[in-house]
Amino acid sequence: MELTAEEMGRIKREHWSVEDRLHHVLDNAFREKEVASIMMALFNQEKAVEQFGYERMQEGRKEGIIELLGKQVKSGDMSVEKAAQYAGMSLEQFLSH
Image (cartoon, rainbow, N blue to C red):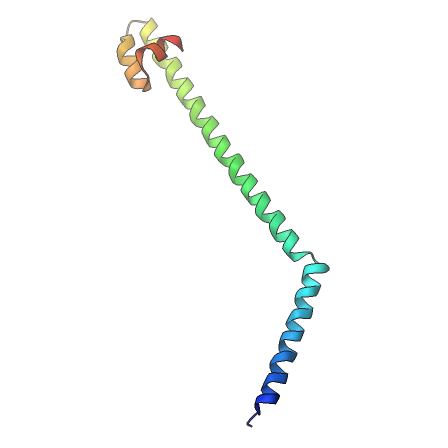
């Protein structure tokens, strides 16, 4: 079956008319775009919380390591210079901690 250009144009317009009506329903009734933007915002917040938690965990580990190194220094098992080096801090930073 061969179609004329006019028939093909009419079929295409009908197809896109259905698509437009469907998207109108999705956009208005289901607020598809709004829901998608809310979901992205929640996803970004979740990632930010995960990153914040990871950074806090790392800080806690470092604090724990510094505390252990301080105990080693106090017991005389390690020099303060070596402890500062292991902590990745300058001597002044380690001593002021």
